[in-house]
Length: 306
Image 1: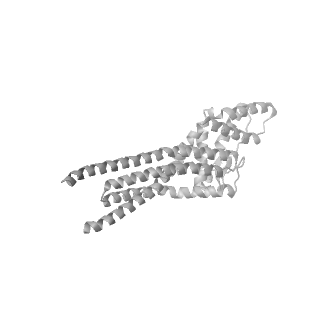
Image 2: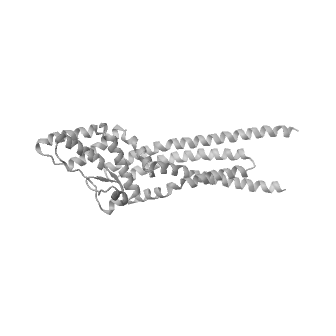
Image 3: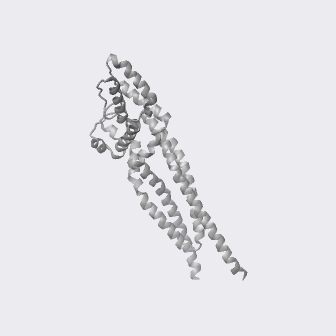
């Protein structure tokens, strides 16, 4: 009678452990991707690097940056035509300049520091926010921002070299990407995303407990595999849904809206391999469980005949 009583308890514990493992995995994997690719500066720069290689995006980006410089530009009459010609060329070909990749990476790094490190990052740079829609007030500190300062400096250097006129270009040029509500989301992400690793360890321990407690361990592998495949499908659907919702909610300016949409699209593409890996892992567990069930049935067949 003892085995009969023990079997339901073992099955119950195993089932709960599998569910717990899947729940923890459902948090750990997206959080790990977010921590490595969004919260960490180097990962964010790498994620945004593909935006720097997108000709259509960079053409629109350069056009807006040129408009910001042109709005506050005052050149002497003899160099006015030359400056206008350079700005017109920059709007079309700035992304092909040899200095552009460095300026783009610095733009991404500055923006990341402002959004994830807050006001302290700005003071650490030794600069104040100015130019364009930039401002030094507290409202900018409570919003998501994009610092176009390095691109503005690149344009200023080109203008100085071409015209010989000493131009004053603001050190930073901050434009809004999102308001305080979006900034609060970023703050929560930066707080909770690094917690992926204890969740991942917990998921592994829960799955190990499920396997050890189960009477039919192959069945646990089958269930875990199906669960991982379902999680992968949920993540993929959620990423597409999030992309539509987030793109509609961001953008206090043309530049901010453009950057937000392209970055979200890049994030969805970047997360896709993690979804695929999870689905393949689920498939591997499922096949291993099915193989174990087949082997078990074949072993039990001769005993039943006897």
